[in-house]
Length: 279
Ligand SMILES: Cc1cc2nc3c(=O)[nH]c(=O)nc-3n(C[C@H](O)[C@H](O)[C@H](O)COP(=O)(O)OP(=O)(O)OC[C@H]3O[C@@H](n4cnc5c(N)ncnc54)[C@H](O)[C@@H]3O)c2cc1C
Image (cartoon, rainbow, N blue to C red; front, top):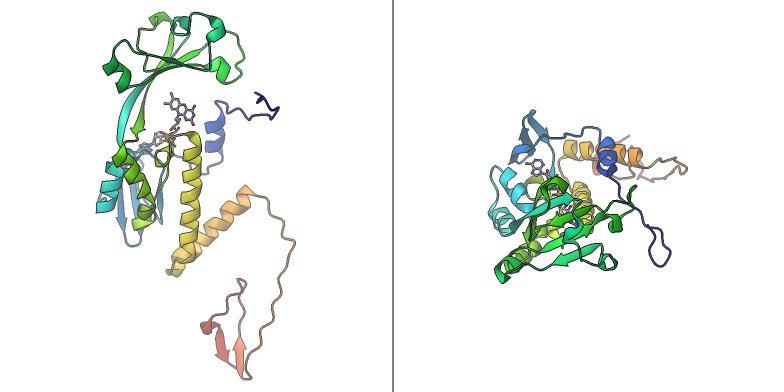
C-alpha cells in the first residue's frame, strides 16, 4: 500500500501475531489467567497450568477483564477498572456486497450505514469495512467486514462471525482513564491496553511501552537486592536478545582512597561504603 505522498506503508499481515508469539520464549496460548494473588514479595498467577510466582504482572487485557483477574483489588483498582463499561459489538466477515452503496464508485474503505430507527442508530454504530480497500488482498472478490449490521446478510455469504467488546468513553470512563497512572506498580501490578487511550492500535502500543518503561524505572529504586539483581539480569537478557550488542567500549576508572583504606571497585561503578576496608 502506498500513501498519496509516496511513503510506503507497512501492511500488517495475519502472521503478525504468530511472529510476535514466536519471539516469546515461554508464550502461553489459550491459557486464561483465572486469578492473580498479590503479596509483599510478588504475585501468584493461577491458570489451568497451575500456580506460578512472578515479581511483577503486566495486565494487557481490557479493564473489566483485568479487574476480574485480581483476587483482591485495591479500592482504587476497583474504582478505576470498574468505571469503564464495555459495549458488545458483532463483526461479520462476508462477501455480500449488497450492504455497500449501490454505485460501486461510492464504495469506500469504511462505509457507514444508518439504522432504520433512532434507538438502534444511537445504540451501536454500523460500519461496513471493504477489506480490499483497506489492504491489498491476493484476490479481486470483495470481502466485507460488517460491524453491527443493521440488516440481514445473506447467510450463504457469511465466512465468520466474531463477538467483540469496545469501551464506552463516557465521562466516568474518561475520569477513570486519568487515574490509571496512580494504579501503576501498586502491588507489583501494571496495566496497559488500548482502553487507556482512544482504543486504537496505537493506544495499545503506546500504553504497553509506557508500562514497560515504568516497570523498568521502578527496578532502579528496588531496595530488595535479590529482586533487583534478578530484574537486572532479566533486563540484560532481553536487551541482548532484542538487539545484537557488540561491546566496543571498555571503561576504566581510578579511585583514590585515604592511606590505610582499600576500595574494591565494582563493575557497575557504584562506590559503596561497604566496599571500603582497612588495609
Ligand atoms: C471490528 C473492529 C475494527 C477495528 N478497527 C480498528 C482500526 O481500524 N484501527 C484501530 O486502531 N483500531 C481498530 N479497532 C480497535 C482495536 O482493534 C482494539 O482497540 C485493540 O486491538 C485492542 O487492543 P488491546 O491489546 O487493548 O486489547 P485486545 O486486543 O482485546 O487484547 C486483550 C487480550 O487479553 C486477553 N485476555 C482477556 N482475559 C484474559 C485472561 N483472563 N487471561 C489471559 N488473557 C486474557 C484476551 O484474550 C486478549 O487477547 C477495531 C476493533 C474492531 C473490533
